[in-house]
Length: 324
Image (cartoon, rainbow, N blue to C red; front, side):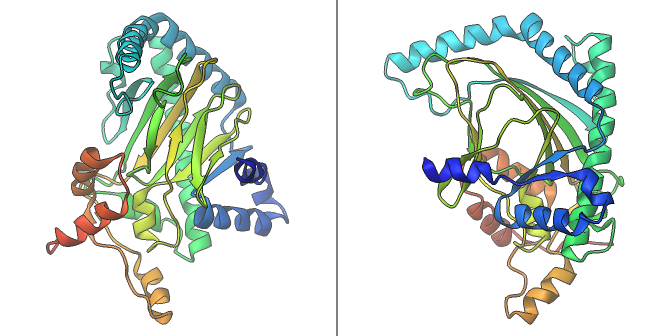
């Protein structure tokens, strides 16, 4: 793992304050390289207040302890018992999780075991993450040579809105990390993912050059990763990458991942400007045109498998799509 350890030391980190200084060019180059060669990067000084992040962490960890820990312990006992009897438990994930929808319609008021304060904190945090997601998308547009707002518009379905939601997860200690992963290796189906992760307990890894590399925990950082839809829209210039969460015998890792995805009926296809560039290099469009919801219907059945057959399946299923 020496290679992976060395790679962790060079993990791409961008101080967003530098985007407002003479160092902007160098910071934009780190983002470009990260999108092309890592699929992940971390943001510091991103504009979300440390006080809000601290409160999100506090209420999320308290909610797990008060509302979800006992249920998880029941699952954990069953999983360990089965694994120790010799059953294959590699098709389960050692996580406690729930999902909050924000757009196009919020379900925050409908979640049964959240108190009013937690709802308010999550609403405020989601608003900040949404703004940061759109800022990140515009930075990607700038690096790609696309007009400002292109990616946001590409994600807008007929309702003019992305699909935006947050997965709140805990990865509790596991006495048998050899039996089960926290979260199996996968790429993310959607657009851009912004993660607020535990700064004390590690476990998230990405696959780079055949090695698993740690995504280093950093206080008050936001981790960004590229989803399958951005790979398609950039015609493969940016890549979604396999990532996983390892189990650990100690520590309860918090993960709050927000997914800024296309609207359900958004038509996804390589950006024509990037296809033109590829054609000049005698490549052309290498990804299909499809409706995002159709891709998601395929993804939920094949999440923990390679992404390339999903893209091929969308090509073979392709039918004329109305764009008017």
